Length: 539
Image (tube, rainbow, N blue to C red; front, side, top):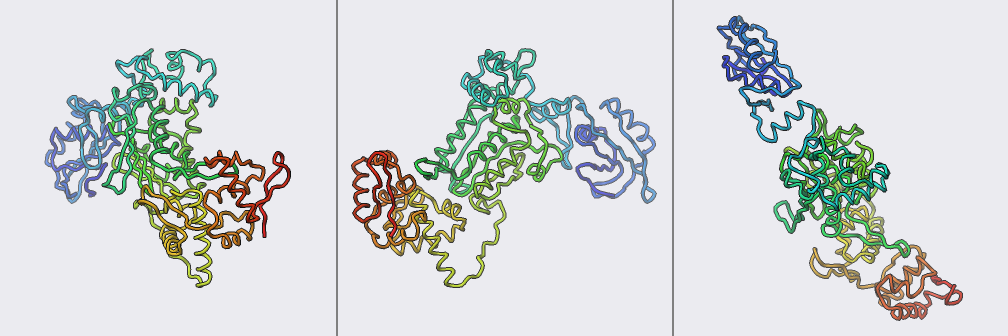
């Protein structure tokens, strides 16, 4: 006989207190209770089986209000009883208390756990229940204005509804029950959702190691405000922008795509189990980031179900509807896939989900295995000839210098991601550049920056002869002068004033740079001052 598991319980003799187990099975997924079998699965038999066969169905029906199947079985001339209990759609109580079968134990449900069971049994979601004692005065004008602005762009709310009063707008969004606010309204739009349920906020921390927290922030308020404030903090305080130029256009990219982080944050806030009293937690490390929320997967789902194409089953449908209408989320069920695609398209490892305790976490990495949670792939390089290895090393060094020229505060992890190399390979190249006098580190690893000690080729756009310029005038050009030269190469019609504005220099300084270029016959002017253009002279 099989021993106890989630769906099977064995008892040597019958006691009326075992009605708790029957109740627990009925509130869970159903199960079987055997009487006359010990905990080891040995059939010990029952003497009064005839009486039990007659009494148990009636006793269970009278006390619990449910019907069960009671059977007499035998093994080795010993009789035992099988009680088959179905899962019930309505909540079942025993002496005014509710029990639930979890694993191989029986638990009495209280507080939030009991409310979850009751809501599940009656087919309601937590966010659809009336928020007792809350009125329109408790909602944030800022949050409502954010919604109006976003909904106007999304075109998912009729313009006449957007222009309604706050009270009518909330009603039109389906966030009231008989003119009283739902919990969804207080969580999504409330000034202080903490007054409704503890843990309705976001916590961000920057860690050097798992146990070494450097600094942290907590973001309170409505969900609409939490999303905006959290994203602002992540991009201004917890991640450093990598600045680049496309012509005169300045572009900023972050360690992880903003779109991916926003999707993951929205997913955590919308699918959070608000009865858990735990905030959404964002842990930021030097080479990886994790977003965690207390929220279980839908029944019978696995991590694979989550990351494959799937239907949408929001834990808080009313909250999800509000964010959908505001245009924050697109087609339900696509957010996870989009998050993964954003990272892959940015050249980053595929983010992965991990079950952690009662909740779920998504992990973003700069390189595979950075989080110590993922699988570290074999990075053993293929065998190459010494000559090929030297050429590869020189090319890597050039790319490192070009990247540092664009961003003096770029980190080794960021260089590795940008170049598609391991951090170890980048570190080795940097060591060589330092020993050759090409590169110097100023300050600490955390707050310092790189300083270039010589000129270097900044772009292949000027042809192979630009490498000759580098060698011939090795100590002649400063990084600002080279940046000026690159801007001229990007836009031959750029003016000295426009370059000055771009580099935050005076026009006179830029004119001096250009005079220097003319002296070395690197740049010449074609046409008049007004209407003409610059030309890079190639030897």
